[in-house]
Image 1 (cartoon, rainbow, N blue to C red):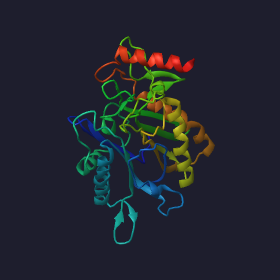
Image 2 (image 1 turned 135 degrees about the horizontal axis):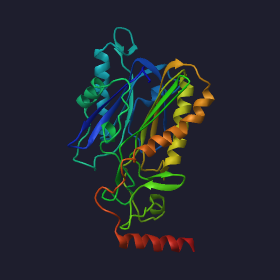
Image 3 (image 1 turned 60 degrees about the vertical axis):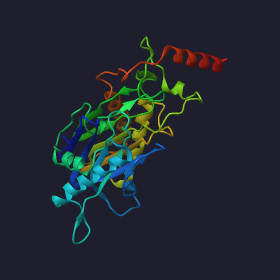
Image 4 (image 1 turned 60 degrees about the horizontal axis):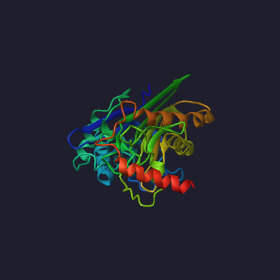
Amino acid sequence: MLDGFKIGHFTDERKKTGVSVFLAERGAVGGVSVRGAAPATRETDLLDPLKSVQEINAVVLSGGSAFGLEAASGVQQFLFEGGFGYNAGKYRVPIVVGASVYDLEYGEFGFPDKQAGYEAAKAAASGNFSRGGIGAAAGATISKALGMSTAVKTSLGVQTYAMNGLEIAVFSVVNALGDVVENGKIVAGAMTEDGKPVGMRRVMTMSSVDPKPSNTTITCILTNAVLNKVEANILADLAHDGYAEAISPVHTMFDGDAVFVMASGDKAVEFNMLTALIAPLTAKAIRSSVKEGAEPIAERVNPLLYSFFKRAWKSRKQ
């Protein structure tokens, strides 16, 4: 499945961070949509349909906040050594785009550097749909409006689709400020002492809460469909509807949410079919990131604090 791509991960178990790499050595049409207000990104302007470069060679998702963008340089070096990239004349320049999540407060301070990116690219293989706390998801957490101690750990979310020759895979690093939800109900998030969800949307209505920008959900969507850059960007934009289905609240001022699309161009399909598929597939990928358990990292929300919130919410309803 999706033989035009290779997927690889590097995980720093000690510092709880890492990098995930999605390679298209021969090139793929790329698109991007960034809706979060606090993004850490690389080369996203190149994916604008008005820009001249038509194909990219890799998408790199990493931990480490802006420090972690360094990992993309290692991926670029790996591709350059293999002779891949945009023909700029005497040399080929690999086109590597990417984004990072803020995970610096989960483990020790650390970030995936250039060598980490190189190792992830070197390890990349076709059909690698591994899940778990690997790669860029090594330090990913959700539900953080009340701090890291009551946040919930996530894993790399993956959802695949195949029908009549069309193939799609969605990979999501879920590091949101909000909770993961389904049909409006919280399926993973900070909990009270008796196991009830607190609800980050409700917490965010309190003016006294001042969450830090330790968030961001980043996604890479791979497909074998034939797309142009305009279509790839439209799909990336529509994938955010999946974010809205699965994360609450979403696209806050403290999130740097971004979606990348890579299309290898092997299967001609009716574009509207893709537009109908992409949001639910993205939502399923996000929810899959909490399937292995959703317990708070260190503790549950203090009963006195929760009682204060309940009184405040009740007062606002009156």
